[in-house]
Length: 402
Image 1 (cartoon, one colour):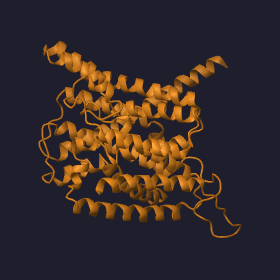
Image 2: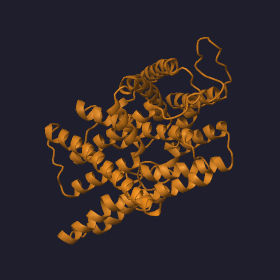
Image 3: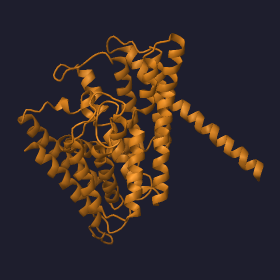
């Protein structure tokens, strides 16, 4: 019953978004603005979506530091510390899924939507994924092999090279949407395809459950083990939902009314479905603790989508206050624009610190907090100076050619 509720719940969300994109209502002259307009009235950068991307990347840094500080500690469901439970939650449902939904929204607002451009960006993202693997894992692994001669580091270096991450998934998503644009698939076909792939991906059992390297190839599409955390079939539903949501958002004439309605719907769905899960014997923390976050399914997706509805609504009302602060506005805009560079940089810093055995937190305290804040700040600073350096090089080239 819970599984069917999850499937039909996701279908209902997708169909509602599709219906709203096709709804042709008008805004009466001089009257109260309706929520959905007949055309695209809400264009340009959406501050709350930028905030969602920035906050999600900060949560990722938090959970990555947590994983490295306490990699040898297992927190069984029901026995987690409150802090660990909080970190796993914000680093789970409020991190990767929110980031992917925002990525789907960005596809709608992007000025470049041609199939070739999407395909090129997809290939680039996959390439960046492997370059990140080399920088954060393979190079330090080989370096420590040379320094210490530990034989297990040789096969480990290959594992570090071939493992998959969110950049590989993002690349596949852009390749998928390149096909969608090329074949001009409508929203209904797109929604049903994403739901069907989710059901298939959640149903198929892992062929390589024990972290075999062979798993990284099929792991592009279905979840196998921790080496393949973001397979296309079970995670595609998030950017597709974001894509449909983005089409609705472009027609939103009254964002306050829209987000109030979304907040109410999210609270009702989250409260009702969580109650059903608890009544059915589900441990809610088991939906996102540790590796449970990666093996998505209809139940988990529907639960997370209800959380996403609440989160985006809350961020919108927060954005009304933050938008008045010029420094925050500029920082959010910069981090949103450089989100991939920030993701890559924080992982390189964390990867090298892990190999250098700097993470030795015994309890949650000052040292853990220092690592998190220091890595976050250092990441943004490094990306900022890298961006300024590129801008100066570009200016010099333009000056030389003029």
